[in-house]
Image 1 (cartoon, helix red, strand yellow):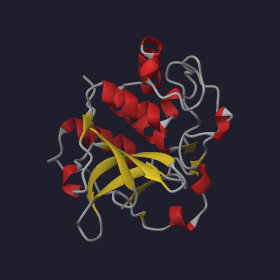
Image 2 (cartoon, one colour):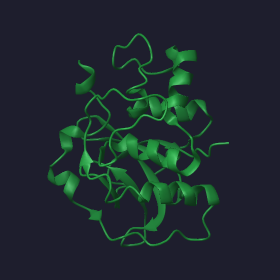
Image 3 (cartoon, one colour):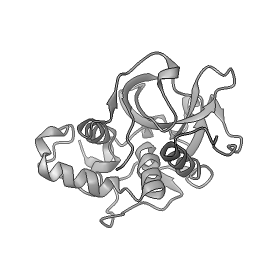
Image 4 (cartoon, helix red, strand yellow):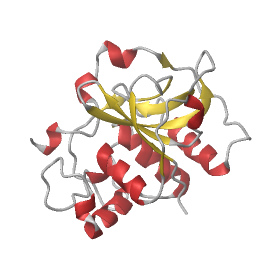
Length: 210
């Protein structure tokens, strides 16, 4: 399987009804002052991508290093997370994942048949970010209770077709008030949507950079 054919996310779903439904696209309100300061910063950085990143683009791209990125109008689910941590804390997941993979390559998934780290793509792959967060002690139990997912948490999900996905939990609530909403890019750009329980949750992380 070629690198550009695997995933970063959910290209196979782009343009389908699955992507277009259940969205809430109203302009987000200011973050609540009751939020933990680090979570408030992360959510604000994620929500600032709404209306900016409008294209889902999973293509393999050669990036500068460190701090490499696609043009902000395009990206995938992991780019939402990478950009939010860069903008909020100056924490570069591209560099951090690459450094950890160089030192502990065998600890990371071998899904793509690589024999060494690839700083262009490793940080844009959901399974690698899952591994990185776990190795940083950020893993939390996966639960069916929406209240267990706090603002600033990261969730990974499995979409139909075994497509991995990742999103940032916000303090904003679903229309029925039952669930926190997510900021993510599931195929139509970065959006704020009620999707926490729409798909199987495969990982739960709370990562506050030191």
